[in-house]
Image 1: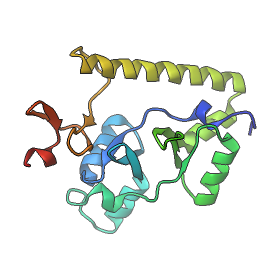
Image 2: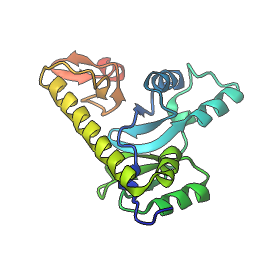
Image 3: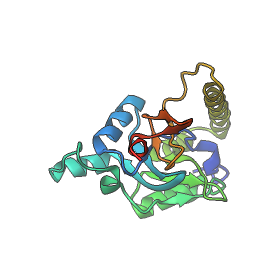
Image 4: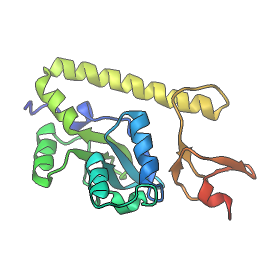
Length: 192
């Protein structure tokens, strides 16, 4: 593994987030729609867990009802995180040691920056450094496009990029927001 490659160069900057109070069924549908194998569980902006396909399989094997079970009951916790300036070799070692396939990447202020998956590690290990840097530039371009799409929607423009947002009352990340007295609120907060 190339010692020069750092996590920031290969991590996945886009992630799918859900709230602890979301149902497992809702989260699984979102995973399916987005074509991902995991969701980051957020309390406001803070990552508090991760729910993977393996967590869902375990839930079903235990004969739990995904429609009635919350994400907080099924998620893996505590969050295993790492800074983006660590080497890819460090990340691969941590994955092997912890027996995990994903690491949450956080900044200095514990801000969620992305997720490093075992697929990212394998792809980077198999790619020459020049290809890895090229892929990184493409990811940065996509992240900038996504951010621009979010700004366009906030300012009233059309955007195909965003389909979830944060409740202005409780901070939950959700698809189902309604304007109540000038605030975008989730279903849980509408009743208050």
